[in-house]
Image (cartoon, rainbow, N blue to C red; front, side, top):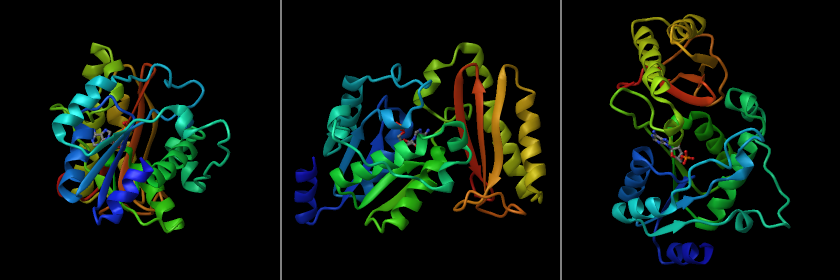
Length: 275
Ligand code: AMP
């Protein structure tokens, strides 16, 4: 993969890379389509990264429908699918791990210790193997985008990070590979997450800028949903992930909930034209 990528770059071709864990859906399609528009070459990686799963998470049962993914990517037209084995990425002699720093300890990082160390370690290795000029990440995983951008700045990596808007089901639920785990009742409840986010975005647009009040609105709406437990809801700055004294356009409301054992995250950028 690395030899091919370097050859493309030497030939003057820009490479756009879309890192994924497979089980591809319309959200991934949107990243690939954007990469396709902006680069001569597009590489999609499919790698279920054990380093970013906690011991009690779903690494073993994470869906891996590779043939289906390959057909989907063939139809979209990509130049390469990079589908390494765990041993190829982490051979026995592999030793180094990235420390994400303080941004990795809050929100998702607090609920999933070690998650972002695993993410950044694999993303850095994927960048080295695929030599992207641009790399595409979903806004749905907002904290992931923040941390990857921080890493790119800190290490002066010659990669532009492109955040792609969240693709949603018709009822607003953010599309996720994990949605297939929801039972019919949970699936019916799940759109309340986006409803709560939309309500808060509306309140911000109407003039409410007090973070605690905005969070309270979301919390109330989510508390009314049956069978849903709240992990966190927080207004954060788009770069520092700190809670601002007042929300401003560009502040982000981030939410994580559990429906049964299934953890779902979502977010909305406040003051965006289309929340
Ligand atoms: P995953 O395969 O879940 O690791 O996701 C691969 C990439 O697709 C990540 O950058 C995700 O943020 C992005 N992604 C996942 N779901 C969506 C969605 N509904 N809309 C846009 N991007 C998404």
